[in-house]
Image (cartoon, rainbow, N blue to C red; front, side):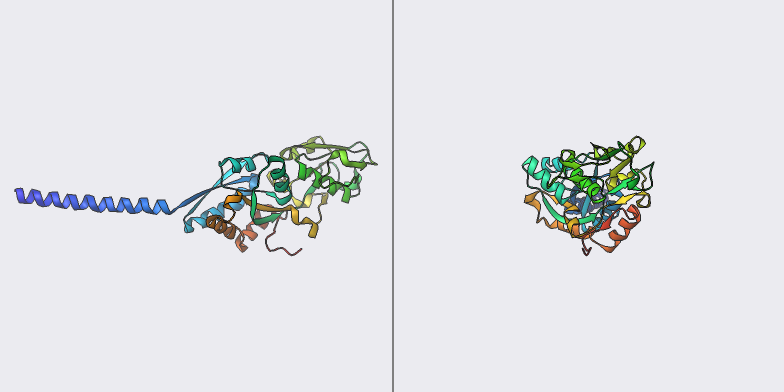
Amino acid sequence: MKKHALTLGLTAFALALTLAACGTKKTSDQAKTTTVKIGIIGSDKRIWNPIATKLKKQDINLQIVSFADYNKPNQALVDGDIDLNAFQHQYFLNNWNKSHKQNLKSIGETVLAPLKVYSDNIKNIHDLKKGDEVTVPNDPTNEGRALQLLETAGLIKLDKAALPTTHDIKTNKRGLKITAIDASQTARSLKSAAVAVVNDGVAVDAGLKPSQAIYTEKITAKSKPWINIIVAKNSQKNNKVYKKIVKAFQTKETEKNIKKVYKGNEIAAWNHKF
């Protein structure tokens, strides 16, 4: 009887060791997984979700953090709340670094998104009447970009400035009321404004289609500063895991998904020939 009990005890002990060993292996596998938080704006989640799924096979847990305010993802990166962000173009980053005395770095290109002009009231941008209101994004880079677009369309003339503001409008023959507002509100402003210059992500989230635009920014070699980028802290610009994330983004599958999600509002920039 004692011998039988001893045998049962040894068997139970062996089973416990086996289960413990299995538990240790599971913990070890989990330890191999690297979690990376990436900040995005709006509908970009539809682009990043498939990439996050693919990265799981490389033991990378990509957590997507959505922001509604263009002013927050860079500060969140500096503060360590996220590890990367992907929402801005190079010009925006350069201006933000300068004004905040930071040194965030681009580690890869994503998309190029031409600005577009939308309206609920007119079919042609040249149908704007004297005194009509035109809304543009109010962040420094996109405000300047939107004003340059309006100049290209022949509506205004600007004083020479790297990043013009409404104060740099030299000629406005139609007497247009040009109002700078938060980028996220430009599409909504169409309820009251004659036209609005709308960022691509905001346009997609608002259900605006490229075919509805009454004017589109032209893509040329001068468009390169407007290419959107993946950004990291300077100290992490050569991080091997982050490079894997860039590589996972810059694929034909992602390019197809960009076309599907944005319906022509954005193009894959990493292999575009200017």
